[in-house]
Image (cartoon, rainbow, N blue to C red; front, top):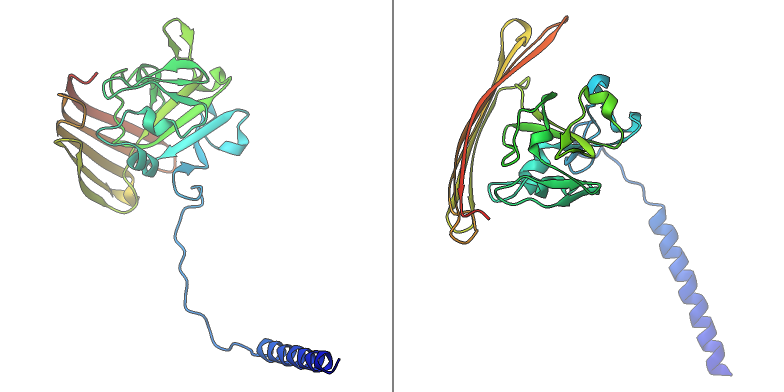
Amino acid sequence: MLKNKKALVMSVLCAVASVGFVMGASAETMHGNLDEVVVEGSADLLPGGMVAKSGNVGILGNKNVMDVPFSQTNITANAMETFGGMNQPLDNILVNIPSVRQTGTMLHGDFSVRGKSTNGSFFYLNGVPGMLGQFLVPTFMAESIQVTEGPNIAISGSFPTGEGTGVAAVVNVDTKKALDKPVLRYKQVFSGESGLGEYLDIGKRFGKNDEWGVRVNTEVLNGNPGHYKASKESSSIFANIDHQDANSKSNLLVGYQYYEVDDGM
């Protein structure tokens, strides 16, 4: 019985000591200013920078994805660089959209949306249809890829068809344009057995109030990107010239693309 009383007294003393310690700690106050914290980002990008909130929706113009009555995903250049590359087909980028399934290869740019096949032949380039092909859709000169799914025939002006049947999405590739600040980037990529890629990105605005802009993107690919006995050779250049003032906007895209693949299948 005596031992139990001693244990009880010790427990009470420990509890009181613990309360006193907690109360003392909570009474402490921090003084002074915290270090400056700078947060950089874009209000138009979702966390991670892979998808933008707004994009071109045909005759509706630029809209937030929450303001259109169908499913729209706006893939950014950051996502294209992360999931794409000289050894990756286009659908390796687009498969981040839940309704897209991969069916492409290094040679073919095919994929399916909601079970219906499509490819670059049915894409839009800066809103203009019929400018790209099945075998290669260049992304090194693209700022974003906008995929509008569902019943959207009224917003694109002409609904694309593939092999006699309507496709399930309107896909628009928006090219890189000159930014407010000059751009000068050079990148080398090595892939597979002996695949080497080189990329150059140059852009600048000039003229009164920076009304004129020029953005030039080049791509050079050579070597074996990883497929057995395969070889790839490509030399491409695109130049985007735009003009914008208070009353109008205009855009001119010119380019040359050479792409050759041996034993790519």
